[in-house]
Image (cartoon, rainbow, N blue to C red; front, side, top):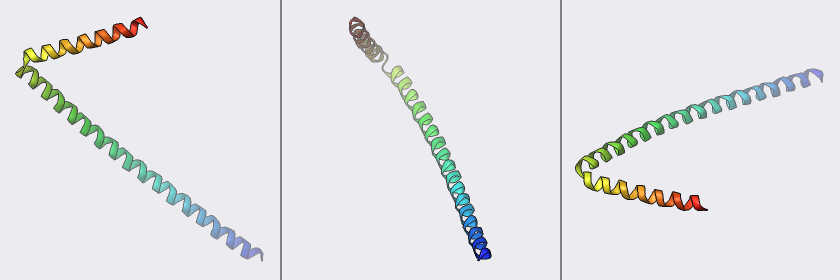
Length: 88
């Protein structure tokens, strides 16, 4: 009876170790997938930002007066909002 209990305990211990190993591998794979996704997202965001800045520079060169007018209008609105918030 003692040998059967020892064999059962050994088999149960091996199952636990196998489960931990499988869990560890699954977590490692999930982390690697997450890192790859984040790197891809960062690259895509960087490209998009560069494209937007290039487009903005192109539009400023193409429409300089309109760009100054828009910048002045946005600056005026921000100034009005800041002054109203400062009064409260």
